[in-house]
Image (cartoon, rainbow, N blue to C red; front, side, top):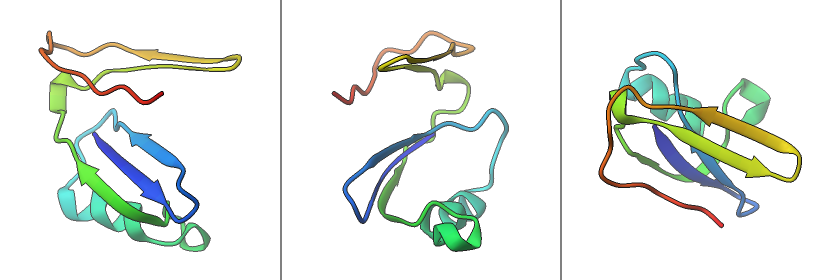
Length: 78
């Protein structure tokens, strides 16, 4: 699980359904979009593991991915 910001100020919330080595994650986050990455200027690894979950509601788009365990904290972006 990670959060990042691109050069236009757009916020990215990233959750992987599979384990991803930290170096691979960092590479994907920083690599330019033209090279298959996200091109983020700043990013933070949240190391969610099995506690990662997502709920998103943006206009008509909805996404819910529950976690495997109960978590005591969260991050909201409004």
